[in-house]
Amino acid sequence: MKIGCPKEIKNNENRVGLTPSAASAYIKAGHEVFIEQGAGIGSAIPDSEYTAVGATMLPTANDVWNTAEMIVKVKEPLESEYPLMRQNQLLYTYFHFAADENLTRACMEQKIIALAYETVQEGRALPLLKPMSEVAGRMSSLMGAFYLAKTQGGRGLLPMGVTGVAPAEILVLGGGVVGTNAATVAAGLNASVTILDVNLARLEYLDEIMPTNVTPLYNDPVTFDEKVRTADVIIGAVLIPGAKAPKLLRREHLKTMKPGSVIVDVAIDQGGCFETSHATTHSEPTFVVDDVIHYCVANMPGAYARTATFALNNATIGYGLQLANKGVEAACRDNAALRLGLNMYKGTITYQSVADAFNLQDKYSVVEKIVC
Image (tube, rainbow, N blue to C red):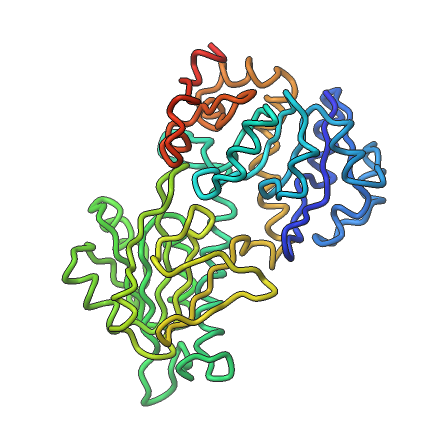
């Protein structure tokens, strides 16, 4: 199979879909790999490292899209890339369709095959989402701490406090991968951390593993309102695989919060879990509503691109080789986890939550009817 990796074009998206090691794995399996020149520069990977393992460098993104049967990316295609997508072409990347109707309809019209990293699922685990959730979760506490500085518009509160002065209160909504990593870093900053979740088994686990300055609590309305009022930083870390994130923090909550407090919406890729959120970029990462700073960057791990790129490739290469070696239909037939990752097939939506998000049930088909 001809496998292509174009350069990412999202604002400050410095990750790359293939590392030289991943390219080598495809080549050793008998496939051809085509990389856009300069695609790895943002992750400190020069073109020479790709050519050293046998990959072919192509001068433009058009060349890569026109050549490849399977495109391996990091982020969803942007509007300028829609015309480059070819019918029956397999795209292996993050899509987050439920948060973007224009992307959904464009991919349907182009009749591509969309294998979405974020919905590949092994049991309850999301193995291709997990590495980026770890990066974004750890980043979220760092960004919250940074924007608490008065010079960044925040309350002027040092997260860890000092002798005689209390540390910041950081509230984490959701105790999954993002929330656990956010709380771990916040605890390392010596902040006072609360995690809210509704899964009692998860709360019990978090209570066992977290340091003493982290308190896992059941998320009922009274506790939620109380913790929102006292928080200096709120990190939104909730997820429903493949679906829009639930809106946990409403506009009216902002009026009860401290002026200069910070909210970090890690769920923004799936539409955000704060009512007042909208996607921002690394160039303009924040905005203010009711004196509350909102950080809603839709590609947070792009800031730490080299770490994120290698972590992502470690997770994606195994599934990618199955797709390349067997073809998407056979790979999804043989592997239930990959089958859950198939969101779209040649104009048909194959993931229920995507169809539900935009009332496109007439365009939906059960994936098993296509690959089994």
